[in-house]
Every structure is written in structure tokens, then in C-alpha cells.
Amino acid sequence: MASILSKPRPEPDWDLVEKRNSIERLKREKFPLDIRDELPELIARGYEAVSEEDIVRLNWWGLTHDKPKVGTFMVRIKVPGGLLPPERLRAVGRIARAYGRDEIELTTRQGVQLHWVRLDQLPEVLAEIEAAGLTTVGGEGDTVRNITGCPVAGLDPAERFDVRPVIEAAARFFFGNRDYSNLPRKHKYTITACPAQCSAPEIHDVALIGTFRDGEPGFALRVGGGMSNTPRLSRDLGVFVPFDEAIEVLRAVTDAWQSDLRYRVSRAKARIKFMVDDLGPEGMRARVEERLGRRLPDGAAPEPEGEPEHLGLHRQRQEGLVYLGVPVPAGRVSGTQLEGLADLLEDLGADVRVTRQQNLIVGNAPEDRLAELRAGLRELGLDPDVGDAYARSVACTSHRFCNYSVAETKEKLVEVLAGLQARFGAERIAGLRIHMDGCPHACAQHWIGEIGLQGTTAPSPDGHRRLEAYDLTLGGGLGPRAGIGRQILRRIPSEELEAVLARLVEAWIADPTAPSFGAFCDARTDEELRAIATGAPAEVAAAAEEAATGPVVRIPGVLLPLTDGADRIEVAAGTVGEALAEVARRHPRFGEVVLQGEGVAEAYLVVVNEEDVRGLDGLATRVGPGDEITVLVAMAGGAR
Image 1: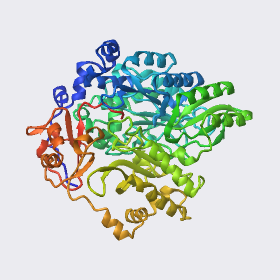
Image 2 (image 1 turned 60 degrees about the vertical axis):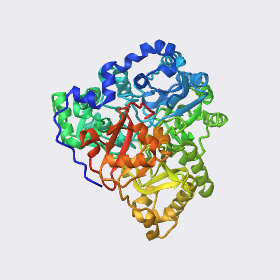
Image 3 (image 1 turned 120 degrees about the vertical axis):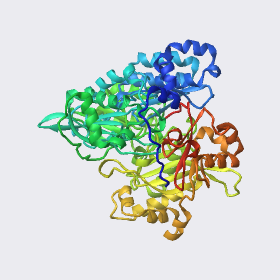
């Protein structure tokens, strides 16, 4: 990979930020939270007349168009810690049935999202959500997103202490707070005292992890995790945060980041993980303590222990009560199901919690009514025994709704798991964790899946069409074996995917020394895994997976019509400009829309390895084999 060296940069000011970053400019022109007051005017003008700038501002209320100019919106509802008592569950189900074609998706942030909501329905939908005690504010946009935690907080006997009061206090403070609604980019907190650290602190912007110091409860602090094109695991800052100082420390971390204009110049480099890259954990700790005006006690994050999914049946710390994990394949349920579940839970005196793995957990169920609970769940089409692999596997929203996705994920995940379960049996694949994304943004976190799949395209055998395909990463994980997956194969055609995965699973099952698929991958080289996956000798498999000979231009899903469906285009070029010109030569429509004179049209951004080319040498920036040039829609507010 070529070395991309930035030109010496002066300290940025707001003029430079607004010149380079169109989202920062639109936030300064009109504060995004204020767009809700303009909904009646937007409705009167009609969907087609709403500017892209105002569509982006609607993100701050958890709203985005399902795809550009299709006329409907996704509505993302925040559920702090994932807890939904029956009355809120029933309200969500009713709203989905009335406005969202009875469809609901559970999210990897323990929330729920609806689709198909028309612009003219938004005021009443938001009002009904808020009447149920829920909110959409900050569901998207440059804000503090839904705050996650262990879904069985307050129930599990092994929990170090109950963190729900901290999650609730943080939600009250940050959600809709104008001081934290103009951040450089989205910002994700998790707060947990679960021994398994099930809420994935490794991939959060900021994580508070429950621990003790001299018998007093508090938190370790990790900062700088995240996925997308440049995955990072968060770093332990080596401090102890007293229990009652949690909100103050969250503010200090966030303020240290949001006040530094270097992380506002380029959207591609705006997340807090890049600040941690620049400063290191010690430097980040110093910035936080400077904000606090004092040093924090030294501390360290505890090691995670146990299974993170909370599957199956468990006794609670409350006498006579149990909680039960309920797999939800691909995280899809109906409003009708949730309304029925609310009735069942109300009768039992129970509640439900949404998990990071897009499942449900029924909590506070009377142990002596367990048979009734199981029967009721099955009657609703929520089988608690459908198979653990379904519960451990995750898929993103998919190209049905998302602007960026180039491949099917939810249907494909269910199809693949059904095939593997039929071939090997539910028990044999119970520990398998598959994460499937439709694009590089990694909303389903394919980088940390034991099997990670990212949607792409491949040419048809005759070369006349682009076919749905997937890139394969193996060996990612969280917890005791936290790590980023290794890229093994590219462009596996959709119809061949199950056969590739079956060869890998069969080899894992045959290995008595590998207790998990992740451990199986850890014990093998990339070449060995590639040979197993392809069913070819190692030297043949290695030859088939040739290294890039030039830079690669990545095209997001929304721009695929300009490149005849090609999302990853390898070119022979020495500069960014030469690379884009070659794409335009092969796909003239791309050149007509994206290129303008000697530069790039204002509606688009170009980044190289996550660096905005305007901060480098523009289109003259040198590139080489392995460099990735990504073309982005400057104003896009897609479902990320």
C-alpha cells in the first residue's frame, strides 16, 4: 500500500471546517434539531420539494429516507439499555402496524426501527412514540446515539452491580441536549457491569465497564472503538471512574473530542477513534483529565468472562423469576407479533429487552409459568429453540432500504443458516457467529464476526452483468479473543456462498482441538483457510486470490447505476485523478455526473484510505497498489 503523506496543515478554524465539510456548514446554517418545527411546512411543500440539506437535518430526529426519493422514511426509536415494558412494546407494535406495513427491525444498538413511513405521517408517528415514553431524537445524526448496556442488567446474579440508573441518567442528560447535538460525527456509548461484557465495549466510541476499587463500585474507561472501513478496537485509558462521576466523565471525553476542530474538517476522519490514534491512550487520558480539572484514579478494565448472548433459560437474582433468550432470525419481527407479545408479558408480569445481537430476552417471568411462556412465544412465531446460530448472527438493514448496500443480507443470512443447520444440525453449529453487511460501513460489524461477510459485486461469466457477491473475513471476535477479522476471499458469488461456508464449518467440526470456530481460525494461516474455503490446494487458492496490482476505487450503492453495478474497480493509475479518469473511461455516466472540469462535482467527496484528498494533494495525490479511493455523496444521510 502506498504511503499517503498529508501536507503540513495549520490548525483549522471554522472557516476551513465549513469550506471542507458540507455537513458542518448545514449545521451552522440551521441547527438540525430545529427542523422538527418545520415539518408542517415541509409536508405542505411535498416530499419531492424537500431539499437534501433538510433530509439530512431530519436525521437528528432518527429519520432518513429509505432510499433517495422513494417517498418514505425509516424511523429509528431509541431504547436505552434495550428495556421495553409491555405498554411500550405494544405501542411500538401498534405504530408499526398502522404506519410501517407491520414491519420492525431490531438493531445492533438495542433499539427498533420502522420503514415505509410517509412524510405527512411523521408528526403523528413522532407524537405517538413520545406518548409511549420513547424518543427518536438522536437516533441518527452527529449526536449521542442510543446508549446500550447488558440487556439483563438488574436481573443476572453474576452482574457486578446494576448500571440501569447510570444508563437512564445518561439518556436523560444527552438525548436532545443541544450541547451534544453538534458533534463531529455520531457518538456511541455503552455502560455495563456484565462479566461477559456483552454490549461490546471493544467497538464503542466510549465504554464504561463496571468494576470495583477498594470495594467501591465504578467503571473502567475504554475509548476509540469503531467499525466502517477502518475498524478499531477501543483502548483502555487506565483509569477508575467512581460510580457517581460517570456522566461527568462521559461529558469530559466527548467535550475533549468535539472541541478539537481537527476532527471536523473531514467526515472521513471525524470519529473519536482517530483522536485516539493520534494521541494514544495516555494522551487521550490527559485530555480528559484536563477537561475534568483533576486526575482520575488509576484502574484497568476487567477481563470478560462467559458467553455474551445470554441465550437459553436463566434464574434471576429475584427469587422465583427467570429470564429467557429468544432468537429473532436477522432481527425481523412484525408489529402484530410485538402486540401479541405485550399481551403475553403483561399477563405474566414480565418485560422484554432488545439485545445487541438483534434478539429479544424475556425478563421477570415467573418460573412456575415457564411452559405457558414458551407456548405463547411459539404461537406468536417466536420460537426460543429455533437454533443458537440464529441468535449469534447479525445482518444489516440490507439493500432493500439502505442507500449504501449492494447485496442482500437479512434474507441471505437466514438462507445460509438454514442450509448449514440442515446439513450439520443445530447443535453442531450452535456456536457459530456470522455477521453480514451489505457495504463497507459495517453496520452489522462484519469485522468482528467469526465469519464476516461484506456485500460486493462480481462480473458474470459472460462479462455483461454484475452479480451479487460477498467478501469473506474470518476469525474476528470480541471478549477474550477480541480482534479484527482477516480478509480471506473476495467476490464470492451469492450462489456459491453456502458451499464455501459449508467447507469451512465441516473442517471446524472435524477438528477436536477447536472449541469454537474462532479458535479454529486462530490455529490456521490465511492460506490454509483460503484453501479450505475454496476446496483447492493451498497454492491454487493463493493464486486465485491475487494481490491488487493497482489502486481500487470503491463506489457506494447509491452510485452503482453510474458504474453499471461495479462497486470495486481496480485501475492502473498513479494518482487519484488518473484513477477517477479511468473509471470514467470505462463508465462514461460516472464521468458525466461525478467529474466536473478538472475536478470533482461539489455533491461528491473523494477520500483515500480515509483521508479527504482536499487535505492531501487533491486529485494529484499519489496512490499505489492496495490504496482505496472511495467516492462519497457529500450530503448523503443514509442509514448508518
